[in-house]
Image (cartoon, rainbow, N blue to C red; front, side, top):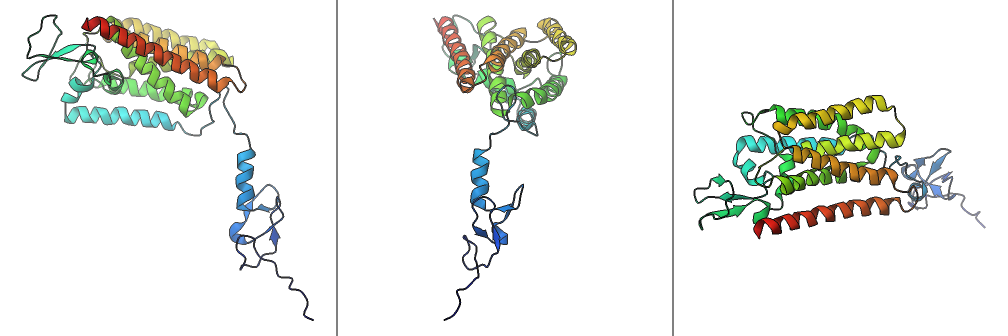
Length: 303
């Protein structure tokens, strides 16, 4: 009678001889299936199961820890691409900048709104159903020869986004960060609509002011040295006052307020299973408020 074969094979590849066992499930695995572990090797299935059971590291505000400010890179890239688009086709500015109400003439020109406008003129702006302007205007900037700043407009905003955005993104995580950015941009546009609906505005400043508010709230929540933070915020508020005569202070203030509200919800939500729900609920509530204010203002302007 022949002795029983002592050859062992990989449980995933029965034709491959193996003499190494997975340290977790004790099954034989071949070199192709070996995954290095703290002690010995594990099979692919045990590695996946272990990854699911390991709790992901989180920041103090509930976001996943990231190694690179990917969202900040993407936002800067979108702003730069939009700017290049403006240089190639300047009409993009008139089509997508933030504007509460205006008139499009039969000659294709853009005019200030008048109560009794001729029948061959058409409403444009948010009042004309172009709600996308509430966000698209935050990705456009003054052309090189436009306004008081020209090309400095986008340069200053992108440098600010790079400096502040990386810090805020590292603390909030990508999802919370992009939500904060967009709600801040939206909040700035809504305040422009409420206070200065006839004034065309553009620029990422509202969103960046929202990031500035987030930086301040997060620093206080984390117990950081506030001397440097306070100087930064003082400079931000000083620029808000100085820019009132040069740019849209309404957009800056709206972004600052929206960003502050969102980050307060992020920072002071309970640190348990309710945290995500509270944070998401606050963002949805702010979005709903901004939409209601927009509808109310559009109704008033078209009455």
